[in-house]
Amino acid sequence: MQYERIRNTPLFHSAMRLVNRLAGRLNWKGSAELLYWRVKKLEEGKLAGDHFEPFFTTHFELGPADYQGKKVLDVGCGPRGSLEWASMAQERIGLDPLAKAYLKLGARHHQMRYVAGVAEALPFSDGYFDIVSSLNSLDHVDDLDAAISEIARVLKPGGYFLLISDIHDIPTLTEPSAFGWDILARFGPKFEVLKETHYEGHQLYKSIRKGIPFDHQNPTQRYGILTALLQKR
Ligand SMILES: C[S@@+](CC[C@H](N)C(=O)[O-])C[C@H]1O[C@@H](n2cnc3c(N)ncnc32)[C@H](O)[C@@H]1O
Image (cartoon, rainbow, N blue to C red; front, side, top):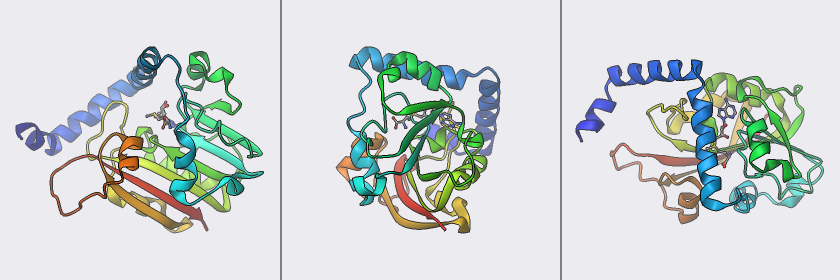
């Protein structure tokens, strides 16, 4: 309770911003992300990605036909082979600042292509992709507006953007971009929101599977999960 009070003060937010800036300079963030995946690999043996397909398809009422012959980009893809299931796509690319380290963790065996880079400066030409996704990665970027503007730039008109994200109000080392339920407004008039859902929980994929709708009447500060399908106009 005491902690809740402290973490909601402007001083705490400023201190977190300062810590994050320092951490950015020393790349603590990348080291922490990589350590997380190294530990996961020790725990699980292999970093499997079998759970991804429904989050790219049925969850958004999309099917394999929507991916047939398409160019697909997964931003902040992680090391699990998020697009391995999408063999019907013309191109399937996972972009991540840790892509090179992920290849060494096992991703080199995947069929999808990994590209090292950040969401804030996507190394692709305008309108290149039919589908762009960000699953559990938008709050990990350092400059949210730059990332959104880049996602809009590389998507074709009519293309889809699939978003699955934690919603939390406190920046952390690995999740420096804290944002609220109004995040979709930041995408502006370039996008139409086709589908949006809010869930209780903080274990992203497990909580979505549980499917408990977020209770916006409950004022307790807590993590929630937003999923959205947007279409570029
Ligand atoms: C929690 S992991 C999620 C990985 C994967 N999408 C999944 O759901 O398993 C967040 C990923 O975002 C990546 N990331 C961090 N900063 C980023 C940035 N500026 N642009 C793109 N990805 C970033 C991290 O390296 C990490 O792989």
